[in-house]
Image (cartoon, rainbow, N blue to C red; front, side, top):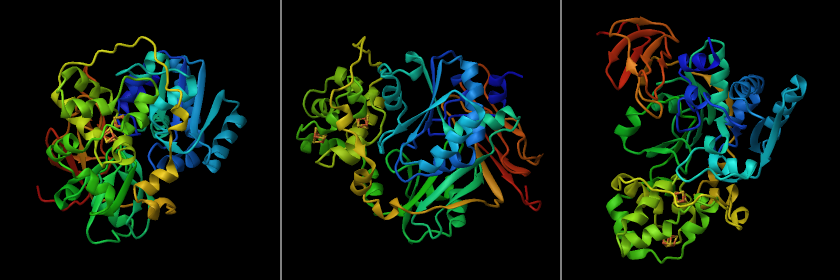
Amino acid sequence: MSLIKKIFEAGVVGAGGAGFPTHVKYDCEAEYLIINGAECEPLLMTDKYLMRTYSAEMISAANKIAEQIGVEKTVFALKKKYENERACLEKIIEDEEYKIDLFLMDSFYPAGDEQIMVYDITGRTVPEGGIPLQVGVVVTNVGTLVNSYFALQGKPVTDKYVSMLGEVNDPKIINVPIGTPINDCIKAAGGASVDDYAVIIGGPMMGTHYVTDEEINSAVIKKTDGALIVLPRNHYVIERNQQSMEHMKNQSKAACIQCRMCTDFCPRYLIGHDMEPHRIMRALAYSEDEEIFKMAQLCCECGVCELYACPMGLSPRLINVYFKEKVKDKYKSKQEEYSAHPMKKYRRIPTDRQISRLNLSKYYHQSLAETEKIEIKEVKIPMSQHIGVPAYPVVEIGQQIKKGDLVGKAKEDSLSANIHASLEGKIIKVDEKEIVISKSSEVEL
Ligand code: SF4
Ligand code: SF4
């Protein structure tokens, strides 16, 4: 079976957040393969753990994938301060004589944004609204590489390493079946250390917030999730995210002082894109110019403008989300060549400053105990854990299932991915959205 077919069969998708089906990403020709080990968001530690623990596996997979794509150069990008991880990788690369260069990055946000990484390594700007392949680059995350390694051994994606941090009694990295309720993850980390809490899956800048009890009780770990941060419900980061769109639109019209700090710090503007959030804010208040609102499509929702740059507490990010949904006409690029802003390297956001601005210093140096595998009795496996078309269920209620069995099939001729059982047990619920597997033999159907 070909490498691409094995990765497709195993249901590998981007493990770093977006969930792009990996068999599609690797089925191309490119000049560069960049391995992203920079862990973009502050606080997270899962990728560091993977680089220490699975360095041999990820380097071996990278070598095979580089061959498949036919690249001239493979570059492993990680932060300078990751000294242990760097030592593990260097040893494997040297021992096995792999042709892989390390690229060491400073600690800034968003170091792990793939377009920033492509620019910093190759000097090429990914076109507006485009993907790295347009400038001859494939970027892959370290977690995706580990899953690809196991896919090549015939093992599907069934488990996830998750950093458990913030207000938990026993911060640690856990290994859980996909579909594990987040309440079980919190329990495994000693429970929450505050009574009234919210949860972010992912990082504090771009993660998904679960604030009400109903949201927390229904959330599960997916293939794309690598961290779970528990914060007091009245924490600055949680409250900023709770502002309604209507409130933010009204506040923006009244309070934007056109200082253009949002634009000057915007990572997309700094690599040469025509992305100027202060102009969108101005048009919102004065001109309602649809051409300017289309610019919102270039926003990657990194949160720099909202959580770092704006002195008035406004959220150009949220306004961009609004216009991405409202304006259906596609933004047409006017640029043929891109030049990065000459001040780009002086406008990076140092992680230390970002952490203190977000009021997260208390959790910055939390040490996470090494991984623990936890026992789970029931998993709810979503049929959509990736960009594109959801998988469709291929099992029935009452069916006994083994870990690794195919339970959701990728939709044919579409951008889609297979889904596998993450637990051995009985299927107790099937619909187009999710499959529930219970370990207990006493489940009433
Ligand atoms: S969220 Fe703000 S800073 Fe980030 S890309 Fe969008 S406009 Fe730029
Ligand atoms: S940083 Fe804030 S106040 Fe300044 S232009 Fe942007 S939205 Fe307006």
